[in-house]
Length: 120
Image (tube, rainbow, N blue to C red):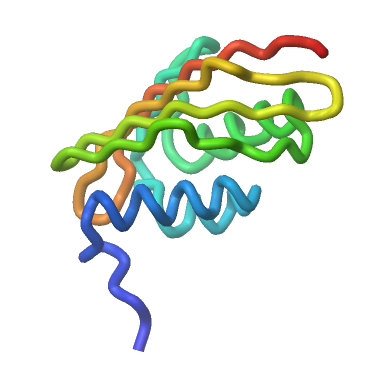
């Protein structure tokens, strides 16, 4: 029997997203946690669907290759979640990462992302 991922709470989806993103398992995260019609607002524009989330993951990986993420604040209230994070690679770091999420029916349906990449 396959796992019913759509029956998960916002807390469960958020925790799964953080775990998979922290492990740099972006494809697994997208398949399990991101709605096909997800909308993400980020400093470079509006990104839609799995294709848009893949593009953002590719950009982040290029900016911070293999950087471990540190989650400094993770909050969930109802269908809303908020994350503050930092990361550091050999050549760059982020000290001000902040994402917000709307989670419905076991999916991340909307997200905002903000971070500043600083060269080391």
